[in-house]
Image (cartoon, rainbow, N blue to C red; front, side):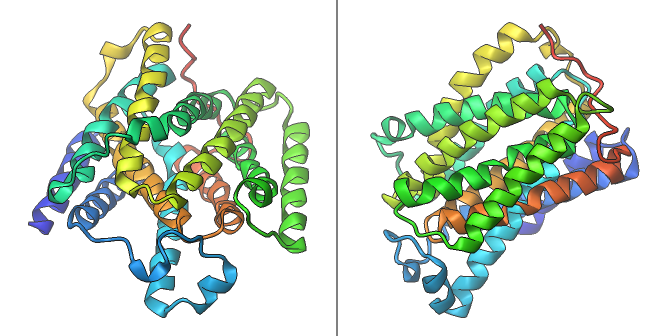
Length: 340
């Protein structure tokens, strides 16, 4: 059965990707295959590890004292999350339809999939779920609009690096809002990331594929993402199930993004099979894998720690943009205009 699931998604990827170059096709196949692996893993009703004190946050000391199997689970989840989000912008730039239409389909595809996973094993959706996820879901929807649009308005490098300024924001907010302690080294890294972002924005200006408007959108995305990250972690600490939380957030996200996409797009019905293939890959890979592993890890790892690990994401995105799209630093920007 497992092999059948993987074979199905890989076949779909190959079918939809026949008109792509080999690198893009390879990314699509890998994304779909890994998406199938992850969905099957979680649908097998694997419980969250009780040994990790589910109602407590695991900090650096507790992480070091955890058993080897637990450490492997946490590290693997973080690695998968960073890689999935690093590849996400590359998949997002591939469809031929406008950014607004991509947003429309991307958020609509997600809730049905998450609902099936959340209901695995006959589980019931908590009646108080949507009240709990209303704020993080709305923040996530706003972050989605600004983050996706930023990728098409500035270079991939600028959008991902500026977006990751949220790492420093989370670090400084952690002591007050999450009762976490931060070290001097973490503060130094945070200030270094701020300085790096300023250098990139000032140096790039409006040259090549970068633009100050796109950089501004990326900054707004960073602000809203920080608020989402903190609010979601607080709810995870309170014991909200990973998949039920993600399902609730996806429904609220749809309510925020779909009206915006309908009003601003004029090519929603012009989607091709090729576009559909990439949208499926985005939903399974950067969406399901990235966000589910982040939410799972949030319950056991300090936000100040996991947010710093996310700094690897822009490196993956920038290198991938150079390999797939020929972007060198700031030389590439999506040719698809934002539909008015």
